[in-house]
Length: 339
Image (tube, rainbow, N blue to C red; front, top):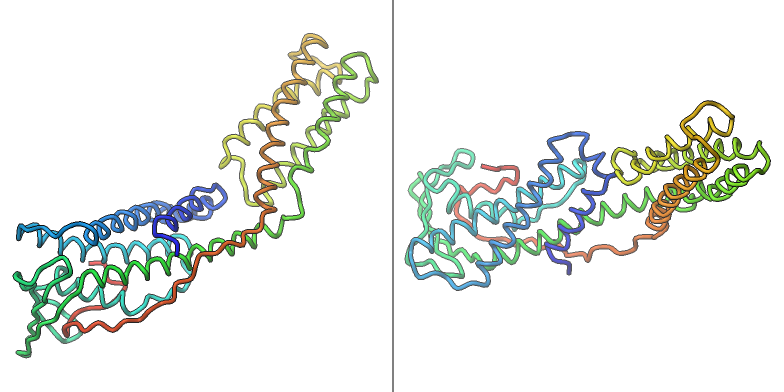
């Protein structure tokens, strides 16, 4: 089973990938909401994990802080997971098991709205029995406006462990969906290599060099035009893959650095006025072309490798477990609630 951290790491890497960033940023707020939610998931995982592993404090005030904090952390983590889904895949349907609703209910009664909790027409008040608090949990006293009263044992450790299993299951479903869609996109271009757009570059630069050394005068002009065609084909291949230059600074840099030497060499080969004073200087321009095209070829190779690799790895499935926890009447279990 993958950990919460490992699943979050994949989602963070996915969200930072330029191609995916473009889609997420179509609604700017979702971009900020995604990263806020990712922080909350990981931070609450640390907080809850500390409670499960650390000793329970002896000071009564610290005990309350610990109980309040764990319940609020569980609540916040659920909201954060839901918001990650809304930011990445708003239409994705994810089943939140009843145990998560029950945890929200316990939080609402214990630390959310303990003095007046409304559920439909029912109003109730709740309180933690001070003497019952321990690392494992506490007893919750509940009183309804109808006059009914009850006491319920709340096992915080059990709730935390069950929520962690559910969070892993849900995030695994999200990651599997992201991988599936990514594979479908890459499969469209798996047999089309971006490198092929640049394979003739070396030959064209050689022909430029031959003309500069006294070779046929027609080949240099053809070679510069061919280099321009190769560059346009490279950019077009990126755009077909939803990869825009502005989102890839290294690619944008090399493409922009090619514009000037290509333009000046084209004029030099046509015997037009340009900034190149001699054939020797033109050779320096040609070597600049070679360096930048070589860099683009290396980048293209990396992209082709990424697109040709079939992602077979999927997250381990964690079966959803629906657990019925006995909680007082009046405890709200609505997942959408964020108060």
